[in-house]
Length: 549
Image 1 (spheres, rainbow, N blue to C red):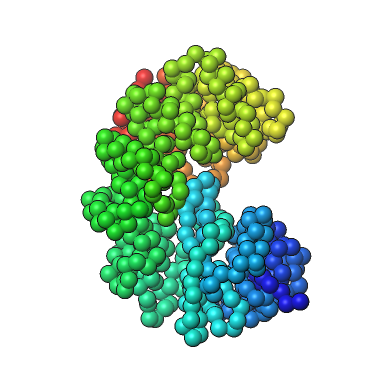
Image 2 (cartoon, rainbow, N blue to C red):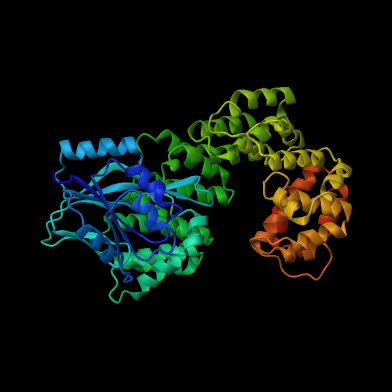
C-alpha cells in the first residue's frame, strides 16, 4: 500500500537533538526520509535506528536544494517537513494525521504553527507559521537558498493554515551560540544576488539576533519600503520586530509612532498594544502602562496574539504586579503576581517577587504555610528549583528557609554540601565555612560553585569579608566561561580596567547579596568601588538604595 504521510528532514551534526525529534514522530509517520549533509558525529547512527531511508547529500549552501532532494525520495501522498531541533506532541500528531486522511483539505500547501522556545533557558515562547505540509504530486517544491518557501510549478498553489503545532528549540540562546546559526544565515542571505523584499526582513532578524540593532533597523526599514503588499504575513512580523528593535535601541519615539499606525491597521492584534505598554513601563510611565495593560486584560477575548500568547494575560499581569509593587500597592501587587503564576507557574522570577512581598509583610509561619500549600505541592517544581527561587528572594529569612530542604533525597551530595555552606553564610558563621573550604582543592571548590547554590557571588563576598589572599588566588585561577578578571582587579585593589556589562551586572548582584547579609565590612568595601562603575549602574544602585551601610 502506498504510504500516506512521508516525513522529510535534512540534518547535520544533530546527535544532541535528533532522537527527541524522531521519538515524537516514529510509528505515526508512514516513512521517514533523512538527508544528511555531512555529519561527523553520531547523527547518522541515530537516524538509522529509526529508518533505513538515510541518504548522504553534498551540501551546496542551499536549503531548498537539500529539502527537494529529500522530497525526491518520498512516496507518500503528503510530505511533512520537520527539523532536528523540533518535535511534536504525539497525541496531537496522531489526530492531525487522521484528520488529514479522513477530511482532506482543499489546500495543497498547509502552514503549521511553530512554537519557538526563546531566551537563555527557553522559558519564553514566540509563535509563527511556516509551510511544512504539501501534496506530493511532483508539482510542488521549495525555492530560495535560505528561509525556503514552497511554490507550484503551474502556479496552482492553494495555501491554507492548520492549528497543528511544532515545537522548536533552535532559537534558545545557548543553542544559537553553539551552532552560530545567525552567522551562517547571514552568509547565505548575503550571497543572494537578486534580493526580494522579504530577504531584508530576514537580514534584519539575523542582525537583531547578533545585537547589531542599527543594522537590524536599517534592513527592517528597507524591507518595509520595498514591500508589495501590506497584508502579507511577513510584513506584519517585520513591523513587530522593528518596533521591538527600536525599543531595544532606546528609539522609543520612533517605535511609538509606528505603533500608532499599526494599531489602526491591525486593531485586533494584542502585540502592538503590548509593546506600547512595555515601552511606557520601561520609561517608568506607570500610569499609561497600567492603562494599556488593564485594557488588554479587559479585551483579551476580543484580541489575538501574533508573536506570543503571553501578551494576552500572563505578561500584563506580571508587569502590573511590578507596577503596583513599586507604588506600594501591595494587595494589588500580590493579586497580579498570583494571576500571572496561575497562567504560567514556570516563571521563577515572579515566584521570587511574590515570596519577597509575603516575607516583608507576613509573619514567618504564614510564609512557610504559603510555600507548603502552593510552591512545594506542584509536581513540576523540584527541590533544586525551590532552592533557586528562595535564594533569589532579597530577604534573609526567606533564603534561610532553604535549610528545610537539606535532607531532600533528590539533592546530590554536592548540592547538599553547597546548601549547607550557603546557610552557614546566611547565619554569618564564616569560621565553619573556612574550615570546610580548607579541606577542598580549588577544583572541588569550583565544583561546588557550579551547583548554583553557594555561588561565585557568595565566594566573592566571603573573600572580601575575610580579606583572604588565598581565596583571591582561587578566584583568579578558576577558568570561567567568560573572563571576569577586570571585576576581580576592581574588587581586590589591583590595576583597573573598565568593567563590561556582564561584570557590572555581577557587581550589582554582589552588592544586593551583601546588603541581604548585612555584612558591614563588605558593604563599605563595595561602596569604595562605586567610582569604577558606569553612570547607569551607579544610578541603578542608588535608586535601589543598595551598598549603603
